[in-house]
Image (tube, rainbow, N blue to C red; front, top):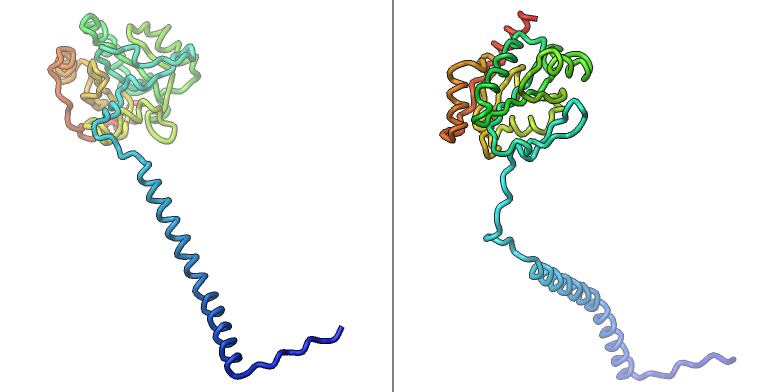
Length: 249
């Protein structure tokens, strides 16, 4: 097939043709940013629509109730979980026990408290722990025998837990929460927490404060009578307790 011959163009035609080519090139250069602008505009509109669809927080919505000891549980020697809500309406004295501690004589004092104030609504909660100097060794069966068969205590004693460290029981995470007035790590066995009838921790006594001490008894009586106020954090007596206990082992 013979090649098509180019049509002859005069000066005016060539000028018009050049103008068309320039116009097409300009259109191509303007098209891309225009498309980007359109895309950004669409995205902005979509985001605005999404923001409108999100409901603002309801200022009148009721606040989530604060946690209490009733939100936690312990495990009995029978391996059954016991919620502390079982003791709603009671005043609780929660103590981490250790049968080999120099403070072990406090066990009988705790039993005396339970008997003396039971009818007024006191429940002593015994929580064995082996966090300090191997003071509660042995198997769960051994611990059960110690507190149930040998001592015949009148207050409930639960299975052994950790009261500090990475294996800390959730209950003790709550009891020692530093946001509270009784917060801070448990430093030794026989640290005592008093819980009022609404499940709030209202007082803490360190190991050297015996269960039959006047200050602890007065606090228990005030809490039983509903006269108590949350106490300030107790002074750290861990060094004294630690040296005393190590000397008594």
